[in-house]
Length: 462
Image (cartoon, rainbow, N blue to C red; front, side, top):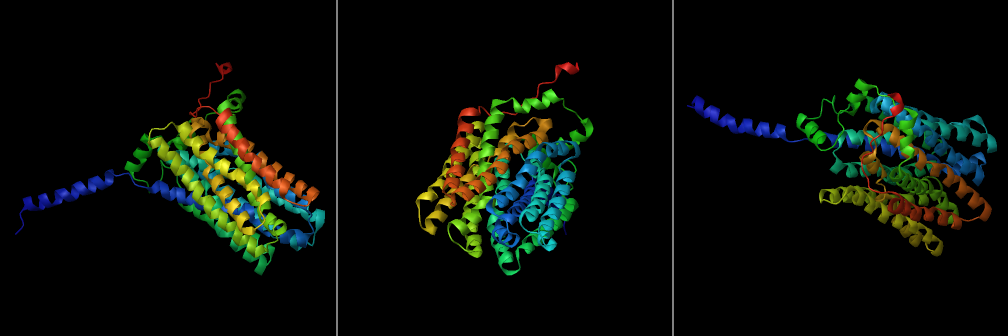
């Protein structure tokens, strides 16, 4: 017969085990990271729809290279214009509402692009319709990356932020690797319209799931108290949304203008401009370069684009892991963030060497190296999460992405004019590759030490 004392003694280890389990910080923050990773995959896939279907779209709708370049640039015009208002909306209404609405709206405009051919238009009329729809797509997508940065700042401690940022930023390569062959097949088998219709449908489903499951750290029913305290104690801004609702703080024009007066921030802005220029080359003209410049078919180009993208994903993850590892080893955050960026931009600049090779295998190898380098250098959002003023994280991310996406306007148009004027992509590759060197200059020469910026109060209010 078991005595009460025996029962009590047997229960003690169980209680201690339960208490120890409760005291362990969980990992729900990585579920949140998985959510924004999946949405960012959809985000980049929707941006890339036109580049995959572009050859067929230009044939069916009679678009010349200059028209196509203008249509490509429409997204970037709106995306740039929408960054600062999008950041302001995030600071005012929070990431859950703004991000969710953005996702639903950009999915609708993706689907609408697939309907242009139904109106029987071609040439300039078709280009104008596509320009408008791409413009609206860019406008409603503009809060996406500032929202990602805000969510990472809320959910992740400083020493994990580089890895988290690199993972969601690497979603662009996953989008290319996974969806490019699928979109190429849709174009080949069903017609270019289906690329837009199917991708928009996927985004609408993701929007419903976002509103159903995402909550902020302070109100999430899934995060353990131990995890909440762990991330709070190590630099995560877990109460950012709660404080936003309580304070409703407003900033004066002079205070906001401080975001444009910091030499450090300008170094970061230059770096983002350069990596964005390379991103837009790969999102817009790269598949067309393979088809028209290298003589590949649409299906061949779809598979070839996917191969370097896998290396880009690997480089993106490695850049964040390397940076966080260096911080944990006691290396300064400035050096830890700059090292993968500078190495990566050097590798990315090597894409210009494709002008000197003749075989497809050599071109693929160089583009793979460039993709890997671009991924390795995609540390800018971690830098912004580290340096942005606490109560201006959304707005700071908007300014950062706004200035970076000026490249999205310039790059597709310049490449379009170069191709139209010269009949080849040689000068275009030199133009894109030069951005690798300019980005290195921004981080090594212009930017100084990376620290969280403190906004000086506007004394005129006193």
